[in-house]
Amino acid sequence: MQFRPHRYRTEFPTLLSTPIGKVKIVINDVNETGALITLNETLSRGHSVEMVVLNQRITGIVQWANRGKCGVTFRPHLSSAQVDLLRYKQGGHRGARHMPHSYAEMR
Image (tube, rainbow, N blue to C red; front, side, top):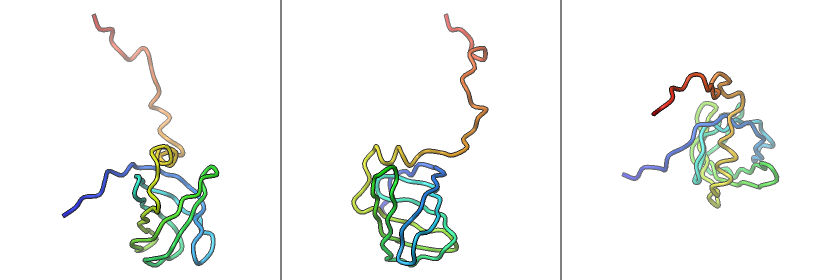
């Protein structure tokens, strides 16, 4: 049994070009080899998909699709910089800020 590499959680909204047209999606997790995508349309296994993120064209193949979600394998694999870009989380936790008064001084 072979395990896939770790996927990073994200909430990255974008448009996906599919055989049925352009579809609004949200990328839920991502790594260099693939992603989990949430969408309102129905895709089929084997569909070729494409998205453009900050002038970078990313292409892939749908590996599975079920109830508004699908798994995509990227062809070619993404670079580390592209993965970091897609790891952006919209509306992150605003309460997790650096608070200098909450740290104890170490001597």
